[in-house]
Image (tube, rainbow, N blue to C red; front, side, top):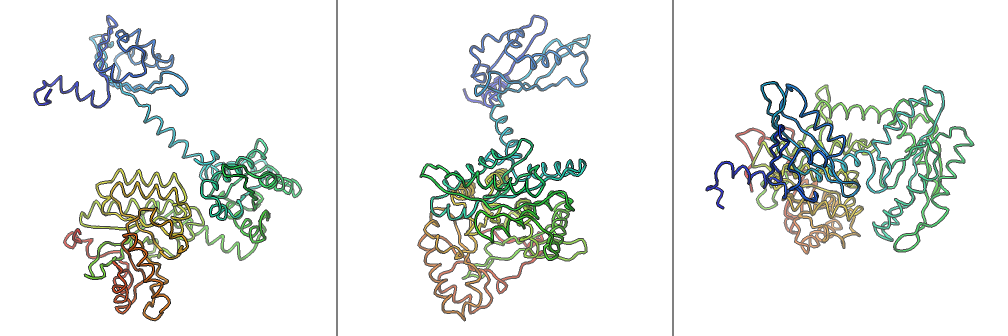
Length: 561
């Protein structure tokens, strides 16, 4: 049938079928239901043709859904004649979810005489919501609490400990030399070690203790043991659980140990963030002593000063996020031949309440230490997408920090946001540092592929910092590489750097990759780079980062390339 030749009712029926929805018309007086499309939508009902009465339909529902439906139908003179009902059928893995959206048609007495509506399957949406809800609280790899949820639990337990005058301990345990396991056995084996270590640590805890995975190789735990001897025994128990027996992996046995840092609570610690920072400080000292070490936090004026500074920075960052005081400085990335801007890199700046502008170098490293970098990276993505919508001729590049690049659930949320704005994706370049990309190679290879499938370009930043890992470069499917500025700065004065940069460019060309040279400071350096075959240059010589470039005016939009 040609759609244009169908009558209005037929077009409406086809539209519902195309949307995967069944239409029903329920006459209450004789309990008769007329269906259209039920056989196409109710795949898991043994015989949809049997649902021709309200009684048969209600019998198919669970008792709770049955009662809810009857309450909607029996309601006298409802304020809103429209209602929505979700229900599940089946059990276990065979459970299917459906949604009813219906209109009650009332008689003169205010009672429902007829119900007309649609029924559609929502199992997939429910599964996605359950998964998102799970990821909001749990680490996907280990099944333990994630950092955010553990921090909430830590806050709660600190309050309880303070109220009951019953001190507790926050402990952070890090798997020693996980990078060596990655390099020796591969990332899959490292994941098996992480999972096994987390399981062993969890099994060594007491019932009231709490554990979560707070970073790639780190686990945070809240322990009830608070005395000197109790804590010492607890730490030995945790370390023995990991190191006492080799971890069996699908490539054979792997030995692992953990170093531990701890802080007693509350003991002058006011927030869970402060507790985590102090435990991390203790862990840092433990790791400096070698594998399988332990340190407990002790006050130190230099460390306290740094902690206070970090807390101030944390407050400043959160306030800037809440007040929308994060802004971009845009630096042009210039075609080395035409000297015209090909696109602009978005460099984060923090606008303080007094009007001063703080460069990224003064807060990004602290944001990574504080675990706030994911929030900044997400805000940067949202800001860049908004600019791309506002300026149709604009091309922008944004950065994903190394910390965020290790977080698979964060990468998925990034993908989802780009997918929701895919009409601007072709004008977006996403920059990943080389070291971060190769450290979590498999996850980032998938991330890069999905971005490129939506039209984004992907660049490897700091190209040259991980020179020994070039064998993996062609597998990442990136579009551009940005040569680390430390090799480009004052290039004309360094024959060694000239040789190195020329080698990098030739390597990139072998992979059919475009190259960007960063930190270009002079015409002489620009000419050298052009001779080497570099495609684009970036640096103060080409254009300084600008928070209000000319193209922000509607009369000065950059031309689309």
